[in-house]
Image 1 (cartoon, rainbow, N blue to C red):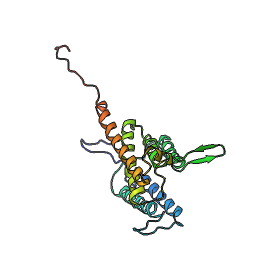
Image 2: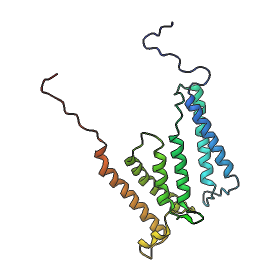
Image 3: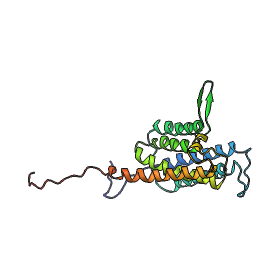
Amino acid sequence: MSVLHEGSEPSRHRGPVRAPQSLAGGLLLIALAALALWLTRDLDQGTLNAMGPAMLPRWLAIGVGLSGLALLAAAFLKDGDLLERWSLRGPVFVIGAIVAFALTIRGYSFGSFGIPGLGLLVAGPLAIILGGFATPEARLRDLVVLALSLTPFCMVLFGDLLNLPIPVFPQALTGLFPADWSQKAVLRACAAIMAVAAVVVFLATRNRRRGPIDVADHSGRI
């Protein structure tokens, strides 16, 4: 029977892998990056002045792959966590978020059933909220604030600054704005409204995050 001295810890991992969780995460990121590069192999990348459809996904895949390599190296150099118990919650919500985004951004029809194209205005928050519930620590209030903050940023970046052919909002929405407004003007107005809504939701609900206040009993009773 071995005795551990105070302050000492038993060896957590045996073998060259010191962080199994980092190893698994690194391999998964590298696999996703390789898949993205393979799927975009036939798309035109373009230039910085005239970006093609493969520019953003291809360089994003490269960044994800480099992050995977960093995790892979860290798995052999630095102690980390063991693999957690497998749970279906994460994959189900993440895949559900991807599917919901794909079905709503451009619309989908299957026989008599159809989903109208809602653009990034709706598909973005829907994917963020659904994907956020992949963790049990998720809070609807925080996800709503994140969705209302991140979506207008993506709308302005992809639809306004980069001029990418991504559906940003339903075309029926243009009828709510003055007829002489351009598509970009409507886009900027929608983005501004969402950003203001994010601030309003954050300020209106911030006090609810505080837990109940414990009142100390000073009566002297034990």
